[in-house]
Structure formats: C-alpha cells, structure tokens
Image (cartoon, rainbow, N blue to C red; front, side, top):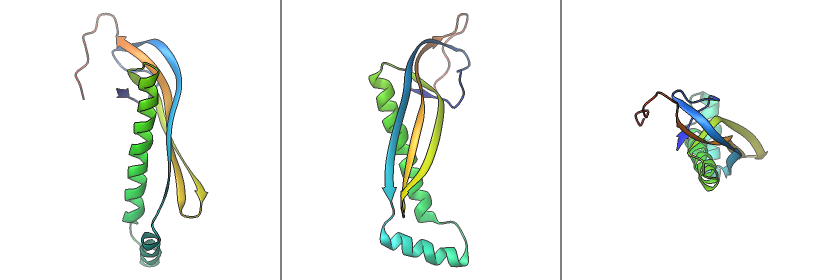
Length: 115
C-alpha cells in the first residue's frame, strides 16, 4: 500500500477514487509516566514516555486507515494527514486520514521500484 501526503504519486495515475479513509486511536499515559513527565518538566528535556506513546498511536492510526483503504479495494492513499486532539486530561486522540485510490503506472512509465 502506497501512502503519500501529496495529492498525486509521481509515475502513477489515479484510476478510481474510492473515498475518504481514516484510522484513529485514543491513548492515555500511565499514572507513573505522568509523574515522571511532571518531574522532567520541572528540569526540562524531552518527555520520552509521551514521545513513545504518541509514536505508537500514530502507527496504530495509520494501520487502521490502511485496513479501511484495503477494504475499499485501494492500493494507495493520497493526501495523508494526521490530527491530534485531547479528549480528557492525560488522553489524546490521534487520527490519520486521506483519500483511498486505486492507481496504476502512468502511460509510458515502467513500475516504480519498491521503497
């Protein structure tokens, strides 16, 4: 599955636009992590515990978006974006969304190498 944040994929042409797809997750930190983050906030520095939770959340949201795109018959998602919102103290929603499409090689072009 090709995922791009642009509206087009170089060397490909969109055959069918299948619709908007999304994936989301809501995550909360553990109380112990919140305490460590509070203490680290006093002295400065990266809040590694939160960084890890957010990174895992982004991956899960992307995975869910890809599942939805595959269910529609897509082989790519264009215009991929992320959105973050807070739903409660210590809990954040991460959403990945884009447009599911079916693409093929553009005329006169060979297949693009896999990344």
